[in-house]
Image (cartoon, rainbow, N blue to C red; front, side, top):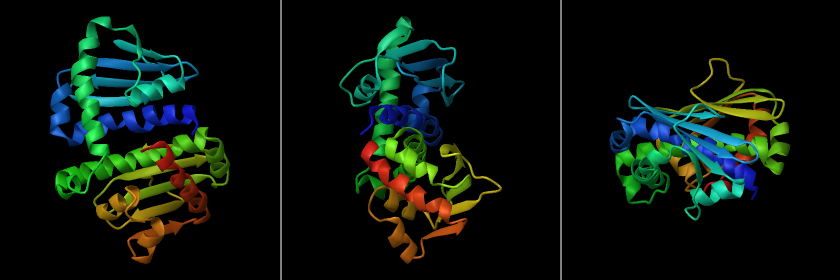
Length: 250
């Protein structure tokens, strides 16, 4: 496993979910509804992310922005160890706001872990099921783009995907798009009006079953619960990239 790829996934595919979590889960929203601050994550080697809380809304951006709290990591391995709970970041700014990191922010990230680590019993709850499905889908396809752009095998597969936009959607569920250009892939929420190819799930249950490993794309196609439209060669190597996601996201 490539540690730099994993660091990019931890920030740009997993941490970014806090935005959607606070929109979908009232308990999470209540933790930060009165907070107005920005946390900057800086990793030596160029991986950066900015998480902002403002007027009850959460936003995440790649890159470096003005912040109230700055957390520094000496390497990609250091950042990944923090996500695994075995190491602490080095605070460079915001010492008076450390209590936020130790209390509300920790509770918020624990809540995110709760929704990203389902059990069969938890999935029986319709609200939990919906939130888990959305967050799992966002995690998977944002992680796919990081694998395509950073992992050595992922780069090879990404270069084989023709240029264009791929829509990924589900009936009454999340919609995303993957923008492919010159072997580089960018994931965005929302679907394109002019996709070159489309991956469509019939319902949320199919999305959940496939992404949580209870089913697979080929079974879903056989059951008429998953369809491919448009320029199919775009999707062949995309599936190879999707197959790499579980190694990085457990």
